[in-house]
Length: 115
Length: 115
Image (tube, rainbow over all chains, first blue to last red; front, side, top):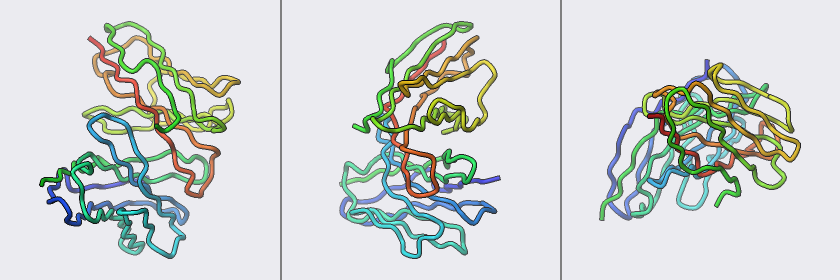
């Protein structure tokens, strides 16, 4: 069965510094997609970045980049130049394929950015 | 604003009762997903509909049911409510079911409290 593991329950980072949030996954499929979502204290889920299993380059979206290491089955999120507004829960998720594209989520990492 | 709307935002009810949560997907999105977020179970997929048809089921209890109407809005019905059903229920939508990025856009959620 597919599984997402986030081993860091909480992380602290100083403003303007970079931080890496870890995510490892387990799947026997060759075709899959990996997502990161942000959940601020207000509760909504905000899509940040996506990496497909066949994508050769690491995904980047502004200050977010995904360090994709397929052989290690890891998809770590890197946030550069952290801002106070980055304080939130961050979830790594995998899309099952092909019969459905439901998302399987990890347990999340709570990131706190301090001045 | 993701474009996905959910009503009501908050719902407080008693054990044994029945409630209906409503979701309107983004304009043009044919696929609707329901997720439950609770402290003990984390974020879990419940059920997916695509263009009115059930596409996939997760660990959805038999007391729960859902449907997607011709106008593509969806309702999640929860009956014989128990204390453990207290959670944040998300609806998400996407254009189609596909392998590619096809991000899921999440609504603001309905927070259900069962007393």
